[in-house]
Amino acid sequence: MTNPPGADLHWPVGCMAGIAMHEMSLCESILQVLEQQAEAQQYSKVKTVWLEIGALSNVEIDALRFSFDVVVQGSIADNAQLEIIEVPGQAWCMPCSRNVVVQQLYDLCPYCGSHQLQVNSGDQMRIKELEVE
Image 1 (spheres, rainbow, N blue to C red):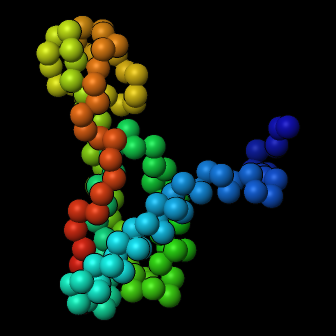
Image 2: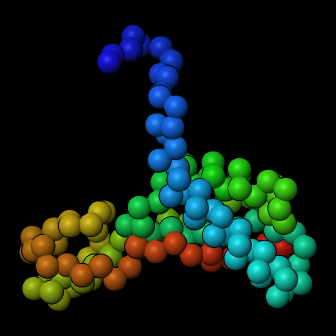
């Protein structure tokens, strides 16, 4: 199906749901952590959340931002600002014994062209810091 330039695209119901479902569940987990820490650390409001997201984590940042705003409505993080810190992917190249930057899984070593890379960074997501009241 092709659409003329400027035409609105109408996706079948539920078509986009699968794209953001992963990010929605991540945001629900983030909110759980925020609520648990609020109880443990005695704060009542989250103003800013800094997340480190690795380039190899398979997290769609725009979908995560959208999901975060939806999930935190009416919670201790309602209207909280979400700051994303992107962490590059890194891997250890076994043949040339170097730590190299990779953009995606299964990249080649930029020095020797080997596929024998072991990812050692950039495949995680973590809450780095919070601003709370």
